[in-house]
Image (cartoon, rainbow, N blue to C red; front, side, top):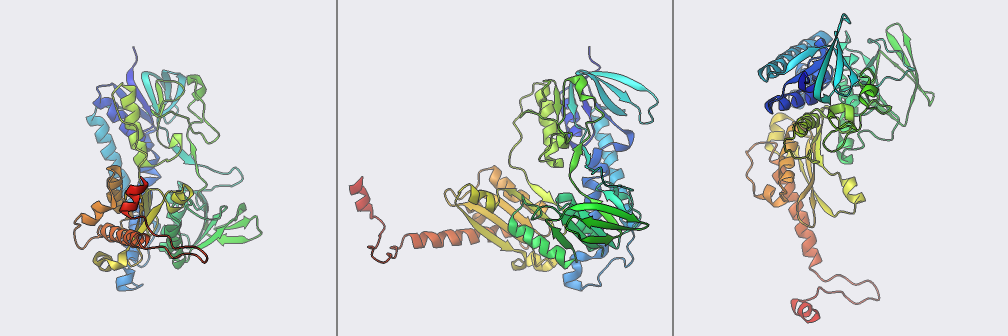
Length: 492
């Protein structure tokens, strides 16, 4: 007899949903996590605090209102990190209370401490202070321990002048200058936030471009706006060393350049938190980045042990992690459940926002899939003028063959909200005709879908009209005319 029907290691988004799904199916469920990390990285050091910080930055700097009211429009002239941290801590505390309440209502036991496997059904839970250890057994186990920032061994992190993506939330001042190493999602989000606060930001990236999985036109638009906030980009550059000099840092690039800044933030990817799990005792192993391999049901090599969330790697989104946890729990209890949809949105909370769902132009071109592009710009919408966003845009990619939506890309205010309209249409197999015929509230940013859809249809109609006209012959050739219906019948 096991202590629990389901034991979840980690209380982040994937762990929460796995535990609650198991409880809803009638199982005896428990979650193991450190007392100060209820909610996981998402709530304490990742998604929620960083997005709250962004909201505080936008509010206190009045950045979104500058186009309407000028550069001097600010809620507070001298913004301190304490101002930003106060709002962040308020939201974190509230979210932790919500999570504890949800687990309690569903009778999910919360076992404080850190877990390590003793065998494939048993874990030892060590208290946070290391005082004692408790053994717990379970019929099914879900590993949802998440990730931590990857730290190069050659860098001396001190939590103040040289920090990782978690530590940046605990610095005691807004740096006048900041070097961000890595132009991935997290790096670009923090670069834009601190640039909005007035920090002089330099982004160092070893690749040729940033956010290479996003639409190129959207990324170029973001780069333009970040440069307008005085962000400097150093692409195809690698950091050789970072020196600390009292309250300053000197970053040496392999090209010989030297960057002086108050603070250096490393955003060089994430590492699975599996090094203390003693996976070998359960018959499991992790790769060099601490990630665990799973199948389509999120089962590991050991059938009754599942792994979900960031610890299994891409896409490592809170939204997809929640669904992974739910699917894993249902499968573990033998409850029929659909596999996770491949159609999920990506949201980047930079300033301005980026969000997309489906394919990019480059992906469709490489796959030789014919498509047409429709674009709507916020400056053409009444709502865009009202909110002072003249740079935002929405782009839809539509199949030339069946007129279905292949991709939606949004840049600007509320991008991460707007994208879900396109996601819903795509998920239902809808065509661009639905967007043309639909009635949207006026004035709204959602109208951009209708504008972009009409843009697509106008282009398609023009191509069809030209295709029906006799093609002009090349020199030395006879004109090629479309076959008449009579000729087609004769031929057939």
